[in-house]
Amino acid sequence: MELRQGKIRGTYVIDNISLPLQTEKRLEALGMTQGTPVEVLNRKSGGTMIVRVRGTRFALGKGITKNIEVTEGLQHE
Image (cartoon, rainbow, N blue to C red):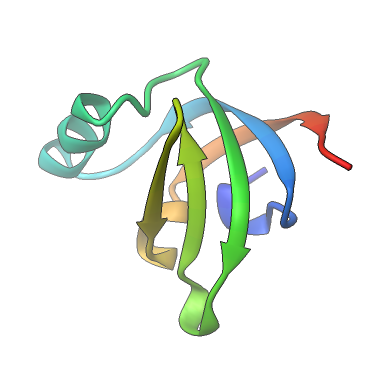
């Protein structure tokens, strides 16, 4: 599934990132790599998502989140 389809408070594991090389390298430098858990914290209007990766919060636009493939992980309560 795409990260943009993730539910708030859900945790997902990154399977694949299919973005332009420069953007992909930037996300890797920030710690967003294959196998990394990602927690969806919030959704904003326009498709922007607030996520937590390795303890750091990021805002990602829908142009990015639609190109990140994830599998469902543990759900927070």
